[in-house]
Amino acid sequence: MDLSPIPLPYGKTYHLFLSFCQEDEEIAFSLLQELENKYQLKCLYHLRDFKPGVHVTENILDGIEKSMKIVYLVSQKFKESQLCKMETLYGITASHKQCENSLIPVLLEPIEMPRELQTINYVDGTLDGTDKACKIYKACLFGDVSNGMPLRVIRRVEKTVWCIPVTRFSEDMTKRKRVKDEARSRQIDELCCEIVEKLNLSKFTTNYYKYNGGFWVRVWCFFVLGAPALSVLPLLVFLVIVGDITEETLAGVCSTLAIVPIVAVSIVVCCCFYLKRETLLSNITWKYLRENYKTLKVLPLIRSTEEVVILNYDTDPCKIEADSIILGFIYRNQTLLANWFGLEDFKYDRHNTYFQKKCICQYLEPSLLSDLFSDN
Image 1: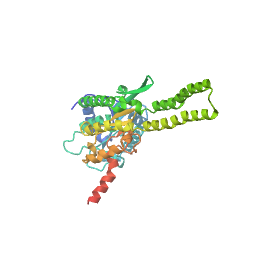
Image 2: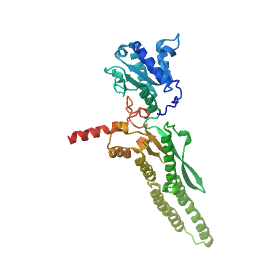
Image 3: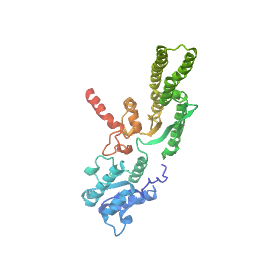
């Protein structure tokens, strides 16, 4: 395992805030030493790091605020400790505020988990051979990139050349998200480059003027307003010169040169304006999604015609083997998943989802359960 230091998020001073009762101090200190020495995690240990002369509540709040994760060493004495209950509630509040799950319960005795922590996956330290420090370290790695987080963003840039709009896709390098696994990061970069190349060779890009609403508005204005005017003026000059013009003739000529182009051009422009431009891009991103969502654990999705995002998403924790069901849900909800903010909130992160939103399996469970009962 790569044990290189985990970078601290902006505004954080510690990786871990250790919450434990006085009776478990020896266990906590042993765990602290392993986390700091072997895994290079900066831990807030209250016996060492709390500021003297400051109220304990203020120290707790400040420590939790400055920590990336809160580790709860749960025992019977922990459950009975009022101070530990306070730290649990403060940690839950901070987790909600940050819109991500930052709680790591570690069970030290074979007892029931406190009610406030029962919905969160925990490290079972009661099992023989459980490496608590290693699991905590992995939880920190897991939390570094959550499900639904944009890893790469491909933006579309448009410009006008000789009054004709052209467009190109390129990766927004400022939006790159660091992936700790270097091999996976390299594969994601290669995937991103391949998608960019495919988008730039697509009909949407090469024939972009056909899908640009502004271009067809300009065409409409030219043929409806400009072309009739250019046609009417020479004709009027000719008729005036020969002296053979009446009001009826003038009205007929103006009506023909005005109404016919308006109707004809409007029909053509409307047909061109409603071309399915999103479909072209969706087909490209969908192809790469099907090829990579299980192996590379990413979802390339079109967010709009302005950009394509490559989202981190690991479906393995969902424990759903029916790939067709997952793919069907993604296909029906591509725009929703690409933006992510439109998904429903969930009180506790089930699989460390971006901005504490529901994971895919939570949306699929009702239909899976109904299918299960119908089969029985």
